[in-house]
Amino acid sequence: MRGIGRLAAAVAVALMLMAGGSADAKETIKIGAFFDVSGPAAVIGTPTKLVADMVVDKINAAGGVNGKPIELIVGDTEGDPAKAVNIAKKFIYKDKVAAIIGPTRTGTGMAVKKIIHAGKVPAFMTVGGDPVIMGGEKLGPFDWVFKSPQRSSVAAKRLFMYLKEKGLTKIALLTASDGFGKDGSRWLDKLAPEFGIEIAAKEGFNPKDTDMTTQLTNAKNAAPQAIVVWTIGPAGAIVSKNRAQLGIDIPLFQCHGQPDPTYIKLAGSASEGDRMPATKLMVADELPDSDVQKPVIQEFVRLYTEQYHYDKQFPINTHSGYAWDAIMIVAEAMKKAGSDAEALRRAIEQTNGYVGVSGVYTLTPEDHNGLDVDSMVIVAVKDGKFVMAD
Image 1 (cartoon, rainbow, N blue to C red):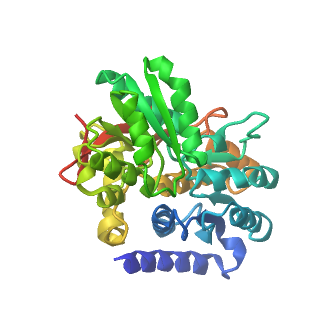
Image 2 (cartoon, rainbow, N blue to C red):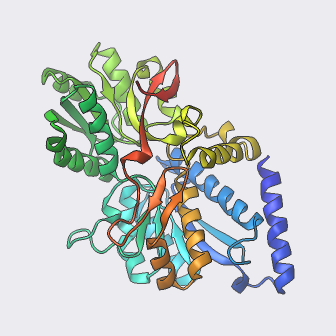
């Protein structure tokens, strides 16, 4: 059970502290972790926080980082950029953390990007959008920011590869008006010509909207071969239900933020046949034994379901492994470089071939994500479950 895992980690930490003397702050490595533990994206942020606890337990039970336990300092952004900024400043200037994990959403990630750069503390974000690790005059430097979820551009490429393979080259887009939706829309527009995809219609919506029938009707009138939706949260399921209610039989594709049992629960039978790019975590049992990620994913699933029982409240979804990968990569870099900020930043940036839950990561100064299309699969809803798409 979760309590047993945390007890084992606590005993390990206590033994380390006993071996080293008094339990003062210098004997722990502080890592700040902030997520949407409450608010609209809590369904993503809360389990991400639980996974962060789980991986820190695992690292500490194995001896910590160079003999020092990790101390996770948690903050709740509530999805509010202003709160995220305040927490980031607290982590950097009051708590003196060695690294930061999170936040949950692209908007809050962008809100703290400049704060993190100014404070010179490595941050490994769990956000979906690309702007946090993009540079330029408008987006600002990304030297100190990394992210564990696939880039939106990678997910868009993987989806377009599948559409092209299936001969679905004329599509309609429905994209959310938030940072994540805009990021997806930008990449879909940019990459479509490369894959011979024609975007016949573009419709927008607020992620809090509860009815998408107007957008779907407009999309249908453009006579596309497929409909592509780019959003996270309940809005995607609403599109699926509205499509069924309108009797639209055009194939529906969601983005990489939707592979989650909650999507199927919310959309019900309407979700049957819906397809979307996902991490391999969603179809772990279908992976060949030759896949280097399979044993890593199986160990993650075992801990999550059998030891901590997190699945009782938060069934595994495509987001589940992001905090695991982020903290593991930071911890591995710390083992090599210690906690000095610049040395740690460089070590994270030199990560090469780290086999994680969400993919095999190889980072560079230009690429602070390190994942490509081979880290993703296309899944489909079949009989109320996610399976590898045909």
